[in-house]
Amino acid sequence: MAVSLFGNHTSEVYKQMYKDYNKTEEDLDQYVDIMRQWAESQPHFPEVPSKKVLKFVILYNKFSIEKAKQKLDMYYTIRSLMPEIYDHHPLSPDMILHGKITYCVPLPKLTSDCKRILFAQLNPNYGPDVFDHEKLLIHVHHVLELLIQEDDTYNFHLIFDCGSIRAAHLPKFSPMVVRKASIIIEKVYSNRMASIYLVNFHSFMEAVFNTILIPALNKKIRDRVKISANTDILFDVFGKDVLPKDVGGNELSLEELNNLLLKKFEENKESYERVSKLRVNESLRPDKLVNDDLLGYYGNFRKINVD
Image 1 (spheres, rainbow, N blue to C red):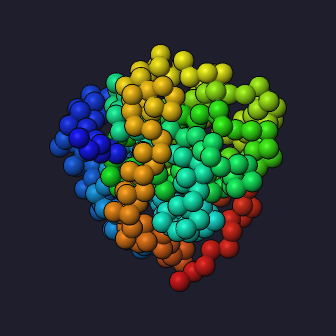
Image 2 (image 1 turned 135 degrees about the horizontal axis):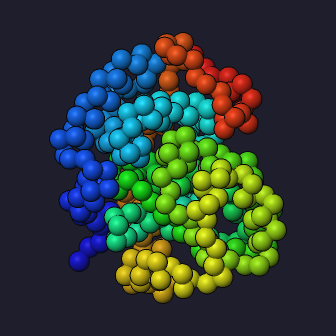
């Protein structure tokens, strides 16, 4: 039986969501209509968002219309602020290669409370010389975009298996890249990362982790990081059935799951080509974009080209 990367969990996910937020299907449809009407009134937006994108901002912001508006705006705006992250296509040769160098795959089975797990690991078949920390962030962005377009979940866990990390990898981990990731998670995804598990964590990583990586994360994300020297904690929290063979689980291997992910990228090729070109028109923005401390590493923002 063929494995679907996202399975068929729509009914159970929405049942859990309506319970979590005390909402109904009619409520969700009403919120989608409100958000669509608002988006249509924003002259600087590059498109009228799809229903999938509208559901994403509503669910990731727990049905708060004002927060959903802010995150929808940032979903489009950040593409101009971080072109080094958003200009890449997942099927470009360098990204296909880096998707093999650093796995980051959605696991097909959901957790008991209907959350998606993203499982990341440096492929042991590749050495530190070809690892690129920013390319890893770009790859994660491509996976998250796929969740928006194809998945029904509204929260996720990130598991990073550190077993393949070597001392020579450490100088390649950049606090700026971690900071960018933290900004994206907060400004676009509303910190809807339920947890971060770093397993098979090496003692030689502690100094870099404590002095470079952790300070670059915002407090909400820092508080959700859990560290373990082995993978036992994963079995205790998630169970073997959802986890890949690589760590002793019953799911497909990371290589097999990565092949399924690549097929999903191919199926969504035109969609990625479209979204990679989306840019807001700052000259038409009704209200000035606030340059807060979270985006302050760009100073007064990078100069944005106006159409």
